[in-house]
Image (cartoon, rainbow, N blue to C red; front, side, top):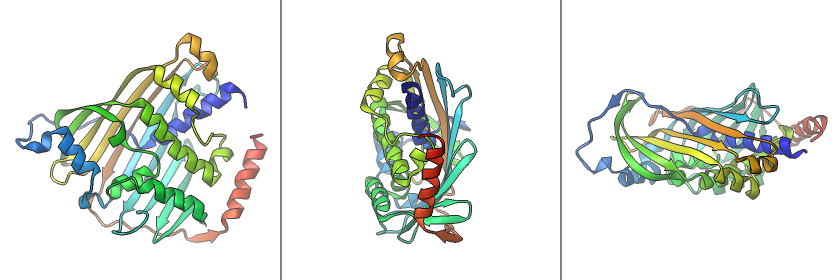
Length: 310
C-alpha cells in the first residue's frame, strides 16, 4: 500500500476510535452547586470510579473527521456507534448490543450472558474465544458499567482529560449536570485508539475495510507534534455522578517538512458527539436471531480484501 493511502487509513481508524467522543452543551444553568460536587476531582471520581448508578444505559454518538491534502478524503468521514448496555455484577463483560457504522456500512457487536457475537443484518457469528478474551481484558480497566463498556473500544476520557476546571452547570437530557472543561492529552488518545484497531484486526474487519490494526508510533509522534488545538469536556450528573456527555475536538496542522512522511496530509480536524441516556433503565438485549459459523464470515472478509487487492 502506498504511503499516502496508508496514512489515510490510519486517520480513518482514528475516526472510528473517536466515535464515542462528542461535543456541545444545552440548557445552561450557571449557578454553581454549593458543595464539593462541583470540584473536578470529585466529579471525576464519581463518574469514572465505582458507581452502581452507571450500571445500565444507552450510548449514542458520532464523530466526523476531515482530512485535507490527500485524495480519497474530499468529503468528511462520519462514524457512529449506538446501543444499550447493562452490567451484571460479577460478569466478565457487560451485556450490550452496539451498532458500529462507517458511512453506509455497519456491523453489530453483541455481548450477552457470557457469549459475544458479530452480526451482519439478522445473522450473527459467535466470535472466537481469543477475541472475547481481548474484550474482557480491555473491559477490566473500567470501574463501572459505563466505563467497562467504553474501554472495549479504546474510549477513555478519564485518561485523556487534563487541566480540568469547573465550567458551570447545564441540563443534558433534562438532567442537571456539572460541566468540566478540559485540555486533552493527545498522545494518550492516539495510544488508546489502537485498542479499537486491534479489535478490528482480530475480527477481520480491518483488512476487509483496508484499515490497519494500529496507528504506528512514527505516525503518532508526527500527529502529536502537529496539534494546534485540543479541548474537551465532560457533563456529569450532579445527583448520581454518571457521565451524560463527553466532548473532544482536536485540530492537526502538519508542517510542510513533515507532510511527505504522512502521504501529503496537510491538516486533520476531528469533532463529534456522544450522549449517555436511559441511565438506570432496564435495557433489553437479545442474541442474534440466526447464527452461522464465524469461519464463514472470515471467508467473506478475506474475499473482500482480496478483491480490493489488500
